[in-house]
Image (cartoon, rainbow, N blue to C red; front, side, top):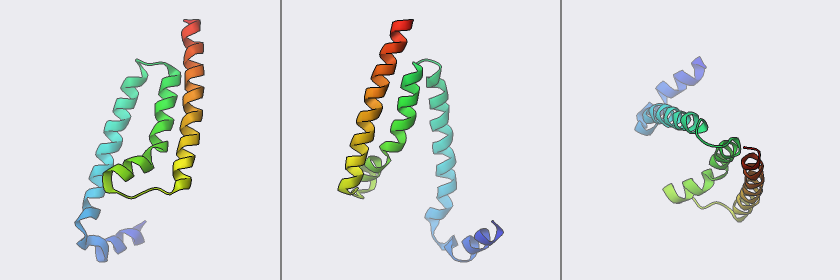
Length: 101
């Protein structure tokens, strides 16, 4: 860990983007988890699971939209398969939960 910090100070310090990464990461993680925690109190458990899984799956799409890095065809196919599976599972679970209320 100390070696990584020394390399950061010696080599990477010139790049201002590196300085911003910890702050952006802390803000994004904090705000995201706060919203996730607050929302979890107000929606069904299946919906909470759906949003937790969909965030990771859609990351390549957000990168594509944000900076223009095009995902490969296999990545898009994988996203589609997982997204369809999660959606079907969540719809089934939500219908079960609504039926038991």
